[in-house]
Image (cartoon, rainbow, N blue to C red; front, side, top):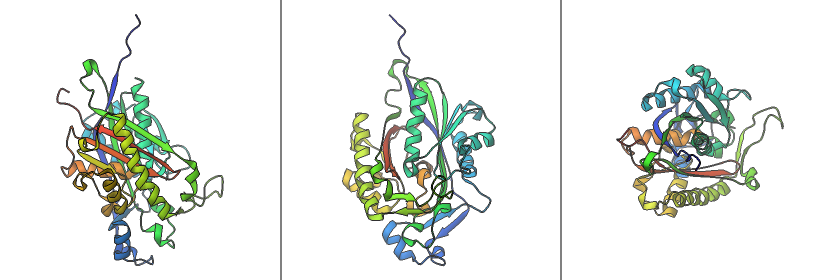
Amino acid sequence: MGDLKISYKILITGVGSYLPINKCSNESLSNYVDTSDEWISKRSGIKNRHFVADNETTSDMAFFAACKAIKNAQIPKNNIDLIVLATTTPDNTFPSTATLVQKKLEISAVSFDVQAVCAGFIFALSIAKSMMSDGNYKNCLVIGADSMSKLLDWKDRSTSVLFGDGAGAVILQRYENKDGKFDDWGILSNVIHSDGQFYDLLKTNGGVSISQKTGFIQMEGKEVFKHAVEKLSSSIEEALSASNKKIDELDCLVPHQANQRIILAVADRLKIDVSKVVSTVKDHGNTSAASIPLALENAISSNKIFNGNLIGLNAIGGGLSWGASIIRIGKPNIL
């Protein structure tokens, strides 16, 4: 008989986040955008967002979030052998922003970017888990970071008021699942999807090969809302099924923080108690790939999520691209 294949479990052992110091309220925004606190709050639930300083970049934010995640995971930074960074707003067209983070951390690790806009963190998590499950990597830094303010057209009040800048990161660690002791821990399931027929619903009106400029965000709000509610709900249901879990077993749902109305509509559709749903969108707006790890770190630091909790993550972004993960967060006491 041949050697039995080693089974690995991928655990989330540390979380970190970063928001720029520059905080912009709805009232402040109304000084240069034709809008008001009432208009924004009613349509999105957003009260504040943070913007990068003139000398601050996506890699800076990613680095700060990464340092916090490494500290919270209590691992030496040199143990990290893989960095997967989700972003739509890289420092440069190339090389990857992940390699800049690697440089700033002063470590040796395979590093690359993933681009799935607001679903980027879920895609990065899925890719990292697959690479680690093969046995090639032991400790991975997964980051979601975006400077969405760089893509905003301030004349478009329906879109420009929704976005902010930020970064979030998690540490993934691989453990050999001897005797099934980690069976119900770590990343239990990932599902990701894309459908290019909806490409024009959420995009920029520029790009390197089209205009040699980044362009501004353009969004068909009503259509995106409809797809978001349906796909955020269906992806969580699919991920729950893949992990043999039920919705009432979730201790917490951490959805993409795009719009409070979407978050509440998804909760209603899934029939999950709103008290179990993490919502931080009022504090930082839509930070694209950063929104889930930002919300996750907030929930942990505010004692809403604890070690061993079963949580769901779900996101949707341009493409359209969407997905979900079911995770038993942290690590068991046997470690």
